[in-house]
Picture 1 (cartoon, helix red, strand yellow):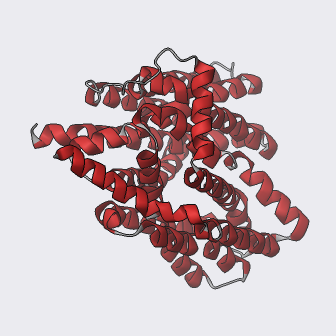
Picture 2 (cartoon, one colour; picture 1 turned 180 degrees about the vertical axis):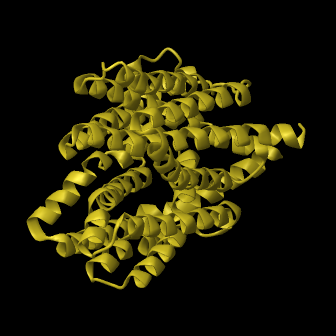
Length: 418
């Protein structure tokens, strides 16, 4: 196999993730801005986000057995094409004055229900394409994390420019185009992808779903990681959607400062993700994982709570980004190593869905804490909760298996090669 062909699958999957995630990030800015500017209601804006995210999370769980049965290629292409059509329908209906709020809620729910499986399916390709490219699994998951962080940086910036130039609804045309491009890339680059044979191909859907849930229950390490990330994602969502904007406003700063600190965090995260893609497979996972969360989590809440000068906030956020970039490569590699290939879809979607389960409620939690105790106490509570959540589970016995499984995987590969 030529070098070009070896890398084609990995490059294709990363490119598809890049355009699809960028489209999702553009939509995450354009759609709420459109709702807020047309209705003037923060409550309706929050409802639209909730109605999109809940189906996103639920559909990931329910789609797992289907991904394992028919393969991630079909699910990814179908999800991207449906998302393209539905997102493209929003500006069209708005232009002819037929986009009532109830219709909008229905459309975004459909988008969420198809985006979840489409995003999950692309991740299922990673073990196959990294093996084909003959690179360590951590390199594939590290590059995936880098692409996600790049999309999280470029997408909102692109959305701001597009919304300013065209307006919220018409910026969604760009989002639709990116989803369509993601479908084309997967269709072309993963044409020869073969579904891993399931040991029980005739097993009913619900039985396959229960098998995935049962596997996750037995896998204490995966279950512990998913539960921990669910809490940290909820706290991160509260920070991004409520705590950080309220801090900026109450400190006399404008939205440009929010952009500055998030930009610094994203930039250093991208840098450390690239480093992790190169060296993570040589490092001991458990200490890197614990240190990464220690740096990336609690400090970004506490530095805001204690009224530090802006330059200190920027420095702390830069360091936090360096710690955060090493986390996703480790999480992704552990998932793929511990799950049988024929169960990638149903188990991985459950892990991701559990990890994302708190995201829709982050804004509610952040707003509620501020209403009950004020901004600074809310930030302290979130910071301490983050530290406890990420430190205590890592001290449990099953977390020592992080590196043990990698050693066993390498031994199996060596034995198979001989």
